[in-house]
Image (cartoon, rainbow, N blue to C red; front, side):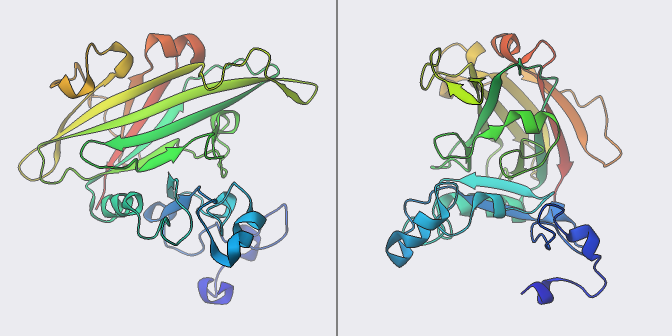
Length: 296
């Protein structure tokens, strides 16, 4: 398989993992851009019953029962974490979550990268983790779910430093938008930040309230499209500042300002400030950075 995948002109030094000295299959080789790849990462090892559960037991909880989370993605590509096993009755292959992700990846019109910027965390003797969930109105499943309960929390320390790894996607999340047969599509991005105190290499739970977060909020986004299916306007608001039920909010008050223009990569760079309660934990300059580009 390795011989088949590697072109004859590949540079072994570039694709070799410096830690192991071996070829790293997570690194794309050749001219095919990693941005055109979407990795579906399964996080449920318990439902994988092949070999009477032996495979799941050997791989451990940070896997889909067959493939470890650390090996289930390509550097530089998009990722979707879903709580499904590798295959079987509850597997990711035939799941609603995989279908929704793939249909948007293959036929969507916009690619949105969500990054967390301006974060200032108290890292003295503390480990910071994040969680992210993405839901779409009308879709009966979360299409992205990276959480501590599923043994794959976001490593905020690594993410802040720009270190891409199994638990530190950089950017935080990649979303493909496919407003189809609707004039307005609503998305909900739930974010959670938790911390644990570490003393002498031991985590302390004396001041910990399970499962209470240091900060948690949901960003509600409406994407309105024109008759040709192209995005016409994007409005947003944090759930903590909305009065009443989300379903009753016909209009969201804030509209994305497209005036800053495009980056050198042809993407719109749009900041979304964190709500005041979140800034009290993450810092006064904390905000989400949306990089939006056409996808076809």
